[in-house]
Length: 163
Image (tube, rainbow, N blue to C red; front, side, top):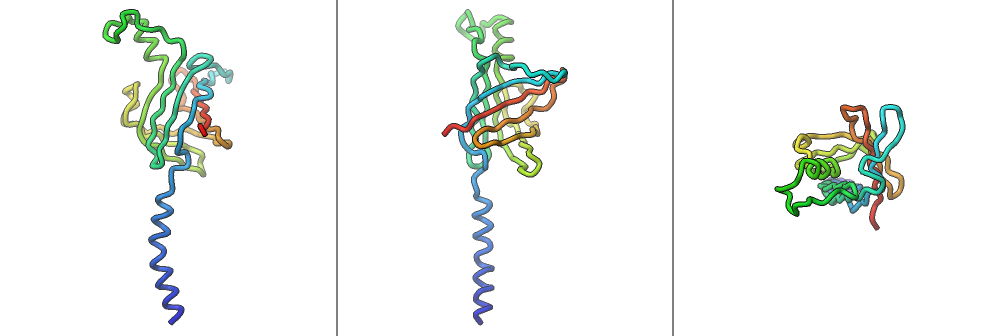
């Protein structure tokens, strides 16, 4: 009888344990501040991709929803004061000086890959896409490589968890 009671208790506790495991917060949940936004050139050298002191923020909630923003500092202001009246050069600087997207994030800790499921992005070609990126996590520092660009450059982003 004791054995039956134990088996019954074990069977009843299993769904609760599985639900608790499924409810674990996303491992990277939190706020991350940009440390570097560089690019590895085809010759292997490393250069800044968004200037010497880019700013950025990556926010991930406990369910893996994220918002990511990277900005080059020193982008010119629109001389007309409105987006609609910007010059070609102002529009170019605004678009090329920022990288923003949001969606959901998943990770494969064994393969060290992040999967960005991009719902919306400043670069609209990314919307509805899934991008895999190899990552390294060392304490509170997260770095990953973006897929190779058509010009052979590989963007690298480095983030530090905000405490």
